[in-house]
Length: 397
Ligand SMILES: *Cc1c(COP(=O)(O)O)cnc(C)c1O
Image (cartoon, rainbow, N blue to C red; front, side, top):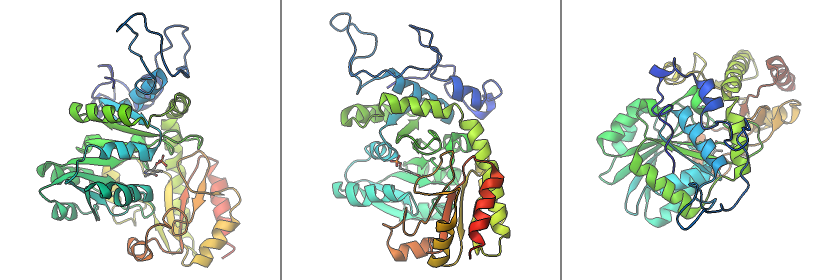
């Protein structure tokens, strides 16, 4: 576990005029290497560290416990979220699993009913076996969270906007309800990244990320992060990280700090092109419905505007049937048919048969994940090329 320097501690919007987001992204945790002056944090590819004598070392003993490249990414992303503590894990799922180790047998967790499929799978198929109780509710209405609270509720786990329907949860309202009941709030901020949404500012206690997506941003590494302010909980997450050992490797840590350096620029472009693609789809006669919090037609547009700095690059749209979706997905040339999101390249997928295939068909229908739904992670290629590719694919319908 580490403490970030006072310089970046409690970074909040009010002091952003002192240090802006892009500056923090490029410099926090990344002082030039003290031995050589290397501007880029080196990949410390080592398993152990020479000690000067018994009990005398430079703060590094064994690389599961500490690695300087991992420390750099942990400090960096904690600073970007305005958090005191950060911990890097081997994947987003490992980060979420470590966070759930704050919960003990006999305790209860409320979860957004439309989380990433892997999150629901971890909770219901694995953690439920250890006498942890989960209730899945529509957290877009804080009253649903309030109604689900029990005397043993210790955590509310939300994802906003949700995948792929882009439902927004009011973080401040949910935090108030949860805190009244003595429960922590965890937010999976993967879809927005700290550039577009900083959940701790709305009273959320813990933020988790799949760094695989926007934080890395180049579709070349799997990783996860947990950031938080509470020292007792941070000590426990650090203890779990070291004890269970699902750490981020030095090379993958390096890839993520390489990625966050351009996070501000990339998110600006994802957001700009996301808006353009959503507007194009809304006007298209073959598109039945568009799901994008940046659209004035989105039922929670006002909340998204208040809570987010932008709307990002994730857009879903319905073309009416499985057959129509198949034609679009098999006709695109620039967009790549693939799972995952948040990379520089535009990815397109079919939630019902790909990312959400494990969700039972009834629940899929209830959530709006129809057979005609297509999800696009708008990349940072030239916007005109992305729109032209979608246009030529939609013309086949
Ligand atoms: C991808 C993803 C995860 C899981 O992360 P991995 O790095 O694949 O383990 C969790 N939450 C969200 C929202 C995701 O998109």
